[in-house]
Amino acid sequence: MNAIYRYFRDVYMGVVTVSIGLWVTFRHLFVRAVTVQYPHQKLTYPPRARTMLVNDIDICNGDLQCVRACPVDIIHMKVVKAEKGEDLGTLPDGKPKRLHVLQFDVEMAKCIFCGLCVEVCPMGAIHWKNLHEEVTFDLLQTLRHWAKYPPEEVKRLLDRDAAAKAAKAAEAAKVAAQKAASQPAAKEAAAQTKDEGAVKSAPEKKDGSDAKPETPNDPKKKDGKEDA
Image (cartoon, rainbow, N blue to C red; front, side, top):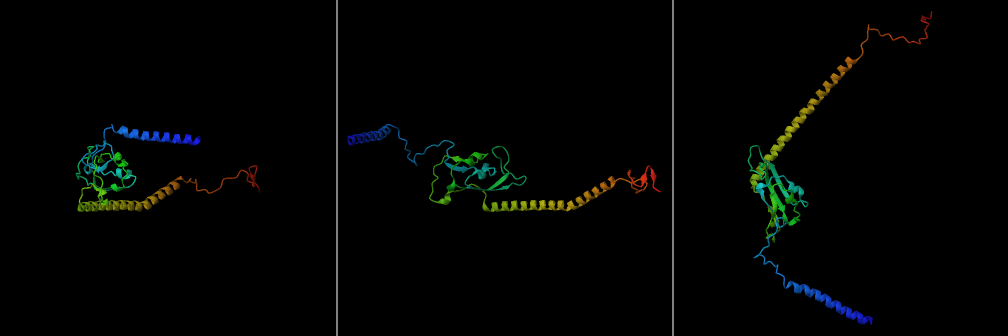
C-alpha cells in the first residue's frame, strides 16, 4: 500500500513541477522581446550608471581628492604649483586654476567601479560616460592617460618645482640657524638680568654692624646684669 502511495505521489509531483516550468515558458511567449542586437542597437543607461570612467582634464583642479578616495590605489597624479601671474584658465566654480596636472593615469583593469572618485570630485572632472566599447585584448589599452603635457614640458615644470622647493628649504635652514645662534646670547642676557634682580632684592645692613641680636635667654645675663 505504501509503495502504491509513493508511486502516485511521485507521478503527481512530476506533473506539477513540469507544468510550472512550462507555464513560465508559455507566459514569455506573449511578452515583448528585450533582446538588444548589439552593436547595431545599444541600451541607454541612466545618468549615474557606472559604465566607463572618463575625465575632463581641462577642468581638473588637481586637488588629489580622487587619489585619496580610491580604495585600490589605481589613480596616479602629479601636480605642480603655477607661478605667480601664470594663467592656467578658470575652473567651473569661477576660481583660477593654480596647479599644473602633469600626470593623470587610471588603471581601469583594476577598477572596482565603486564610484568614490566621482563622488568626491568637486569640479565634476572625473565622471561616468554612457559608453559600451570598453573591452580590449590588450591590457595596456586599459591604462587611461588624461594629462596633455608633452614629456619635455613635464620635465621642465618638475625641475622648476624641485628648484623652488630646494630654495625654500635652504631659506628655512638659514632662518633656523640664525635663530639657534641667537639663543645663547638671549640666555646670557636673561641670566644677567636674573642676577641683577637677585642683588637688588638682597637686604641691606645698617651701620655696617655684623653683631648678632641678643638672645633673651642668655645664661650670662640674669635680671639685666652681667655676671662679674
